Length: 78
Image (cartoon, rainbow, N blue to C red; front, side):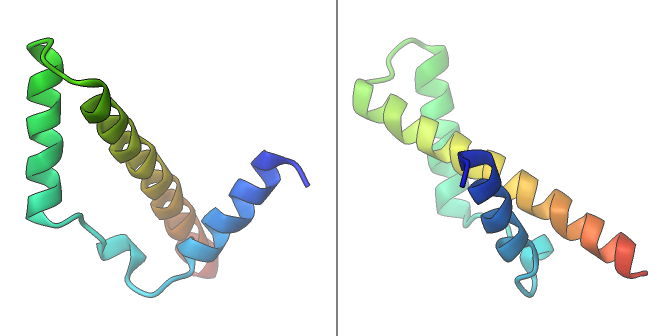
């Protein structure tokens, strides 16, 4: 199984979860991301913070894919 295929299966699974389109990160998580982005812009981001920001970016990308797939499933069902 290729990585892309495995990713697609995981995205499909998550896309069928109830209320996935309503998901939003908690206020605390969003505030942390903005804090990390501010540090990045001011060139004061530590290696640990860079890793944390990268993790948030990967998660955001995954959730965008999941929500797009969920919308596609809803359109096909209609």
